[in-house]
Length: 144
Image (cartoon, rainbow, N blue to C red; front, side, top):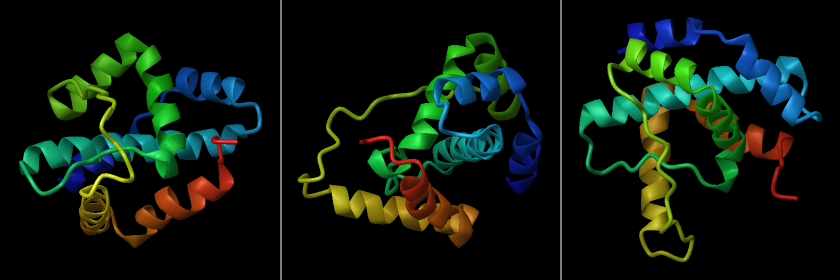
């Protein structure tokens, strides 16, 4: 599992990073590189959840993890690269499926969020959890 994550983290694509930096001119090239690496981790986590067949965990993006979603969208625009990346590292295509039912008022939202946080903590640790859901939202507030 972690061997695959280590391999995934070695992947680099300057075209994706440069386009993101150009599209979000307030985000530095250095920060774009970090966001790209964290997006690779996110994709690994999505695949890991699929492999675990863990029915208690729904991996989803909501406003606090928006910057990762933006980078994921950017990566998908490079369709050939994204396709090759997914098949090389995961053996399958990781689809981006928007959650149309994601409603914070939903009685299951807090439970699903807590389960996802626990899963991220178990798989990637406290540092990643804090980066994605505390530091990134503060630093890259895209909702304003």
